[in-house]
Length: 144
Image: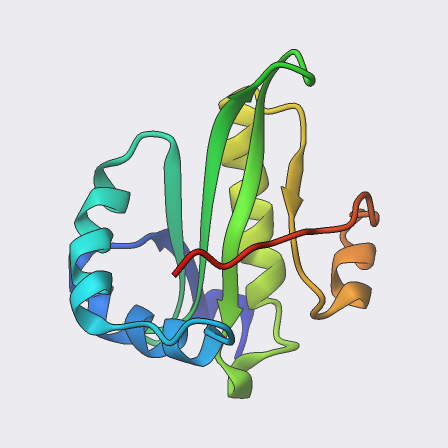
């Protein structure tokens, strides 16, 4: 794959099947259900505070990133949060994740976000190489 083969763009409704397949690969605690996915996708695509990006190679989605910008009190304004970032296992280490994250950062800057953050245990070397640093411990309580 060359850089010319890669297109980072906003997701479209027609990407649903390929993004769902990747979401199933992403899910650890929760197993994505198609009905819930199909209900959420149009709402996310219409949400001005959400950005769902796709990494498209030769016409097929090989990765996606879902993130949000929201207001805070402590950071004197908005911050950006990456909720999901997934690159197909056979397409990793080819620049797709970097390109997705860099495009999300551009969008977050355009929304005047003070920073970009995410919770992950995967690929710390990848995030460090892009200038991210460990910042906090993540706590979670599953409600359903």
